[in-house]
Length: 133
Image (cartoon, rainbow, N blue to C red; front, side):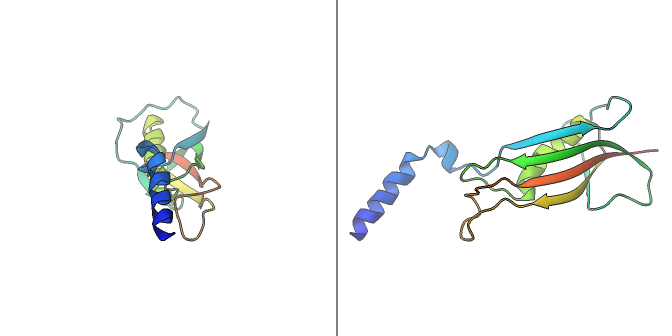
């Protein structure tokens, strides 16, 4: 009986396509509300964008956009903030932002024993800012 269970598990795992089985990055949907009065000038892809937990008090800035990021609810995906960050940073570069102010993060619901099989999406709410000179 134990052998049968092992064979069943191997067959079941083999039926999941490798592209899904090895997926570690969630699909991230970004809802963006532009706040800038002037159309943003994009930064080169991969430019450095600062991550902040609060708005800076020592520098003047302009709010560029409010962004709500949501992960998919698919299986076998990491849904922590670090897995969402590349999509958020890419959008920040596209909008010419110098920094991302992280306002809140909600981790998707997942069984305690498994961080991959989430039934609800993770969500991050951010504000993109551009420093004034």
